[in-house]
Image (cartoon, rainbow, N blue to C red):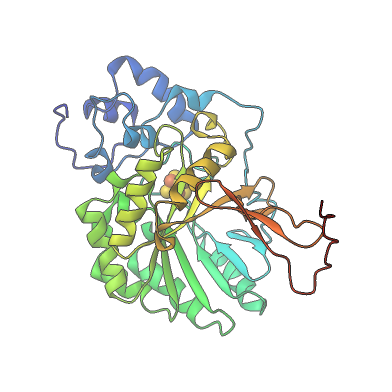
Length: 364
Ligand code: SF4
């Protein structure tokens, strides 16, 4: 690894990145054009992971701005998964009958170059005012069909312990809620934020779950693992979601190492997301067929405990669906199906007992 200066604060400009040895001086102007459109932040824990001697470093690719982010692709969408069209009240997205997203803040400790909310995160007005938060919580309280609240953003863990405890306590008083989930990059990006005070603020809810975002095994540093351990030891289950990214983790060996490391540290790999159609992220997207081939390769190698579900969030707000690979083919006239094993070899599984019996072919 090349020598680089010790980094003790979040890098927020191309000049910061260049001074830290993470951007070539002749790349500053192009990175500034990217930064004028999409926020930049690389905290010390992640900056320390970047190997400046590798042009294809998978950590740098996720966080250091790239001029390709200004290339528009015809498939890109400003609101790739329909957050805004499904928002009945500011700060709420209500896509499924039994769940809502509550986004109290749109700031993050790090800005990922492939973020699906990149058009809104990190911008002015990125925090709900007290009256807006009241209205969002009132919306949840008024609908007994809502069973789960997913606190997301932005990263909710940028809020102070006091604000978080206040939100968590107000949700805990809503009888029809069965679970509260927090989506966060914080244990990976700024593990020191996961203090005893933060854990205590979250543990006030009776059914709190934390889902971290982790894309590469190198992100699971000792400090990140210790941050997750503090949550788990306090009785808060931790799961992980991973975004499939070209040039970062789109090979079976990297994903296998990542998923095994997560399970080893009591973190369940939950979803592998196909990358969304966020603006300027086409260079990160794989083909769905590539993702399915990776899942096929992993299914033969990993225990079910370590295998996430490969998911697509259908553009336009139509929701998340698993996208395979499917091992069972369609039923034949007698209900029997061809089922492929992990090597792709087909086998016949019979139809149900009451399926019509087909005439036997004549014996010769
Ligand atoms: S932490 Fe999440 S919301 Fe924030 S920039 Fe990264 S992907 Fe987007």
